[in-house]
Amino acid sequence: MIERDTPPDRYRNPFLANAMVELNMIDTIGSGIKRMFRIQRDRNFPMPDYDLDEEGVVRVTIPGRLIDERYTRMLIERKDLTLMDVIALDKVQKGRPVTREERDVLREKKLIEGRSPNLYVSASVAAETDMRADYIRKRSFDKAYFKDMVVAYLQTYHEARWPEIEGLLLDKVSDALNEDQRRHFIKDLLQEMRIEGTITTVGRTRGAKWVLASRTSNDA
Image: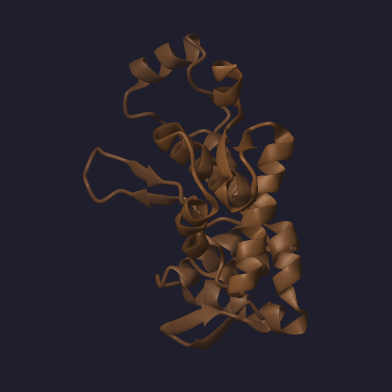
């Protein structure tokens, strides 16, 4: 489906497929699967995983977290990679086997290192430039995840002091950053959410608490 980008030759349940088309519930151009892979690539995330082990059942998992930061850095720097390159590189970061053809292409493009079957994503891109500041600047795709965590915490507990938010997020921020940089990332994230009107502070100095802005409006 990814290579052809066309509808399947047949559907297992033509009656159901035709009914869903009539109700505008599905498309018929065959681009949905490929679109999922493209979206993940654009977000610099791992590729979707399809589980076909159970006959008659298809399960798909769409990862929303980083697995190997070298993979993410490679996608950030190498916008020339084809979707098939990225899918093969994703197999390597997940420790899954690749075909000889995939391995040769990845080696030719200097995307992987090691000897089969112990291949890993090349770190050469990270070595070419200091990626830490650039990485945090470009990882806006991750901010939504952290913001959602803060909102969910405040929805549950209504308020949070800095140590509580730091404890919630600190170990989840990229290891590509040192501890001070991770703390700065969290502070910048909170300030950004405050400017956006999502959260606000109650009190000052060390006793200040973060709350949802909508909660203070309702209290008023």
